Length: 122
Image (cartoon, rainbow, N blue to C red):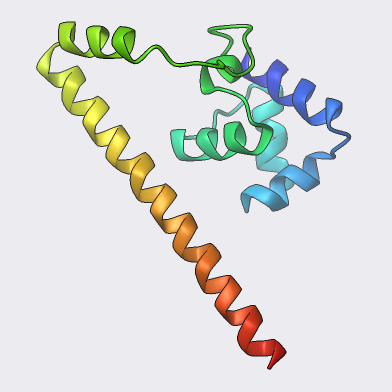
């Protein structure tokens, strides 16, 4: 399902495989392998793709046909977390920490780029 969704999203956005490959900093042939199903992206790359298209990872993986959930039911999320085993809870915590780290890193990168632009225009 992932390969089908990747190709569908790319074509619906009028992009070439090389456009996505460049955006993701990978080779065109590697990206092409994702669309043919011969290779799967790691979760970091999957997050980048989902963010680029503004879709959920569940949508990319075919777990749902809802492109991006509008509202997250926090109570449902907490209930699921509370019933999870300790290994799952630890994985969720690690993943959440990673997402928060990436968000902070991207914000810092944007700030650094803005500062560089300001300095070069002076």
